[in-house]
Amino acid sequence: AQTVTQSQPEMSVQEAETVTLSCTYDTSESDYYLFWYKQPPSRQMILVIRQEAYKQQNATENRFSVNFQKAAKSFSLKISDSQLGDAAMYFCAYSYTQGGSEKLVFGKGTKLTVNP
Amino acid sequence: EPEVTQTPSHQVTQMGQEVILRCVPISNHLYFYWYRQILGQKVEFLVSFYNNEISEKSEIFDDQFSVERPDGSNFTLKIRSTKLEDSAMYFCASIQTRENTIYFGEGSWLTVV
Image (tube, rainbow over all chains, first blue to last red; front, side, top):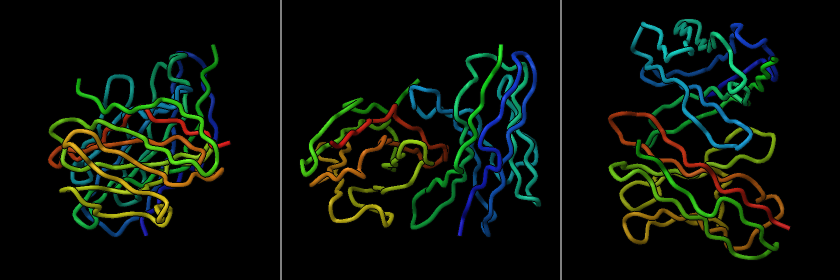
């Protein structure tokens, strides 16, 4: 069964500092995608970053980058120069194909607090 | 940037009433989804829809739930007889196969009283 585990229910960081959110997943698939979604208090799900499993190079998106360790099935998110607007729930998600459609499995989320 | 739109943003309904949540997926997307997030919990898959039929559904998606795409643009989730435990944020999502990135709408917050 595909599962996604986020071991940190809550994290905090000082404004302008760097924080890393952890995520591990379990799969027997070789072709899949990994995502980090941000959910601010408005509860909208916003895509932060995406990683294709077949790519060795870690994805980056401005201040957001990932450390993708395929063998270890680890997919952590690093936020550099943290800003107050980064405060949100962050969900790690895994996407795979089943029955001809893509399916997302989410972790339980990490609540990030940014302290001024 | 294209986006998935959902209506209503918030609905309060009496237990036992029927509710229809509406979604307009991104126009060139082929697969459509409904996900649910009960307050304080993780996002859960409900159902996927492709080529005008359900391609997969979870155990949550029982006979009280139905989906349809009546006019080629709207994608609706109907809950026939709401229960208190149906209170949740319902997210519509769509995907264009090649990109393999699922885009979410802003969610419809359903409160059953």
